[in-house]
Image (tube, rainbow, N blue to C red; front, side, top):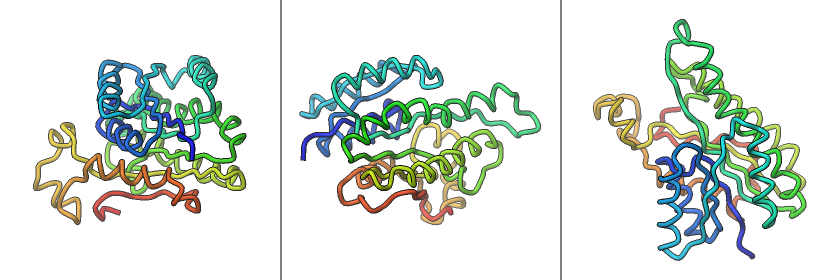
Amino acid sequence: MSQKRALVTGGSGVIGSAICYRLAADGHAVIVHACEHTASAEQVVEEIRMGGGLASIVSFDITDGEATRIKLDMLLEDGPIQVIVNNAGIHDDAPMVGMTSEQWTRVVDLSLNGFFHVTQPLLLPMIGTRWGRIVSISSVAGVIGNRGQTNYAAAKAGLHGASKSLAIELASRGITVNVVAPGLIESPAIRETFSQGQIESMVPMKRAGTSEEVAHLVSFLVSEQAGYITGQVIGINGGMA
């Protein structure tokens, strides 16, 4: 099968970069998206190329629908993008009683509106190929909720509903749409937030997951072998939910 182009939003972060490396190793031509962290994204691209893979960088703000469409139209000049990984997202935590409207809007805008801004313009070209894979990265917070994260949980739960609906719309076109919902994944931020004892009490497997484990799941979901899996929210959380 010919090489497919894969766009990974937020491709410079801990999970995003692991997904980029994995998809490149699988033989995809990976488009590493960044907004503020372009230097990190360039490093990911360089490492993929050094390993013999194909990668390029694209930079735009996914909360800006018009700017996103312009950049995506430029990318589409080189052909359809058949794999989309909606990984970009942020959290800005606070108890809702003290949460500002800016905190709410910013988090929902990036995760949920960003999903629409990136995915919608790529659908018709993808449908034309009658093959596609769309995976959005959510969180266990979007499944079971989490204290201090009403904005983040709302954004991620919104991704679940959007993905299930889109999966139904695209099912007859050879395109699958799924969600991956990680729990605690090893990163500097997790280590700063939780002690090992806290992780062991929260996670039945007594450890944080790795970004590579998330990337392996994404790799499977965008493969030929996963062609009958669609509309699913798949947890990867060590038994948390």
